[in-house]
Structure formats: structure tokens, C-alpha cells
Length: 192
Image (cartoon, rainbow, N blue to C red; front, side):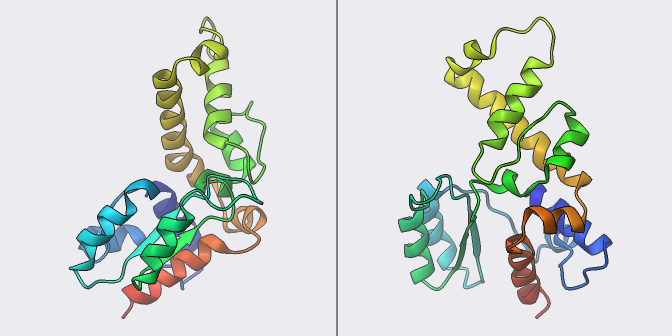
């Protein structure tokens, strides 16, 4: 949610008038975000169908080609009911944030591939930048600790690093214009 709001604001501030004001739409109640994941998409689909409103689902790919996206079947089933479903072409949303923006909040971060686990790499660098911490291997062996570190990294990346993005950086990291397409499609419905 933070990712979409911040990127939309960045693009709007850069003069892209066909990008909706996601924050204003949410504040007015014309746009509602419901965080789900692929594994519970069908549950939410049956609950949302009765609203008779357009819905958009954005799912992380979570796999590297040539493998199919992790939740491809769920996405296809939901799309077959007339809903709009997007699956990222990259591993996950965090892969659409330029390395330069990530380095603004964590200068020692090195990464940026389309199928790298950006939250995990970011969490590792962040963890290792604190002196006196336990070794990263100890974090990796504790699934709860690892998940907490990754979730913290995701929040920081989507909440803070996205604010260091520019339209040019987005174009560089998203040469297929996926993010703009998602936002413009939502904006077209909001402007009706």
C-alpha cells in the first residue's frame, strides 16, 4: 500500500497527470485497500464479489522464470470471474525500487536484480551494519526472527525508499512500465 501511494505521489509530483491521487482516493473512501496474499485470494474473492465494484489484485511473482508465478492458478481463477489481476514480472514489488533509492536509506546496500530477494538482502545488510549483533546465519536459522527482519525491511523499503524514487528512476528500473500501467488502470476507474 505504501509502495503504491508513494510511487503515485512521486509520479504526480513529476507532472504525470494521468496517475491518480491514491492517498486522496483512499481518504475519500473511493478506494479501499485490502491486503491479501495469493493463498487466501479465493476467500476474499467470494466476499468481495457481492460489492459489485471493480477490484484489482496485485500479486508478487515470487518465482524466477521459467517457473510459473507462485499464485498463477489463483490469479487465473479470480480473473475468470471478471476481476483485474496483475502478477509482477519481477520477483516482488520491492524489485521495482531503484538501487539508488535503497542506498539513500541504507548506503551499504548492494543489489538490484529483478529476481533477487530484496527484502532479505536489505535485512541482512541492515542487520550486519549494527555492531555487536549476532551473526546473520543465526537469524536465518530462526524462522520467526528472519520473518520479522524481512517484514521490517519491507516496511522500510516501501515506506521510506520509495520516497527517494523519481519518475526517471522508476523508468530505469521498470522499463516495461508495469507500475504506471497499474496506477493508470486504477485511475481510469476512479475518474469515472
